[in-house]
View 1: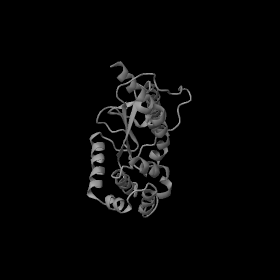
View 2: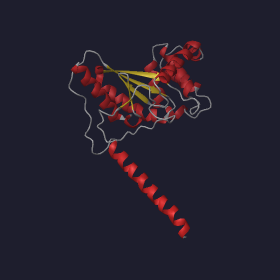
View 3: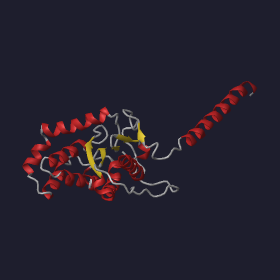
View 4: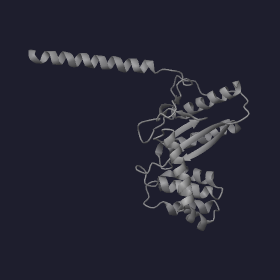
Length: 238
């Protein structure tokens, strides 16, 4: 037993040191949301393929309300998303709510970032959205894809459902089906994927506000509102 005693002591010392580091890191990261919301330029938001945003605010944080400021141009809020991504689907209703709250103070943009290795129907859904875009019905298709995500996500062939959405929207079905397979639609999706790569994005949903990327742990409704508020205040002060 005595010959193992030094090793046991070393293990306990290391464990205590690790515990101290963890505690210090927790307290050291407690910055305000406005000062620690964004990812540094060209740094990935998360090492994982899919981010999981929290939709619950910390109980000690006051509700986030938009500032009473006037701006001459809207703050641009961009989502890099995957239509089959569950966290994207969970965030979708909150993004719609935020759009309604801020009105013309923000402009919302969506960029395709299908995680094809994880989600077999993500690319097909992006093609459906872009094909609808060519008939000026992008947002209508976008909404249907997210609202009905569970209806098509696990299908072997989701295209009949996408065609049914196109029919509901009054699209030219022949053109829609042709466009889904077209090079034009493919290039639009590839262009968005390249934009994401240039920003170091590797997970969904990723939110970019006026060119500043939110950290994964602040990609939630309150974090997005704080990011928008910060940019609105900057605009008003400039």
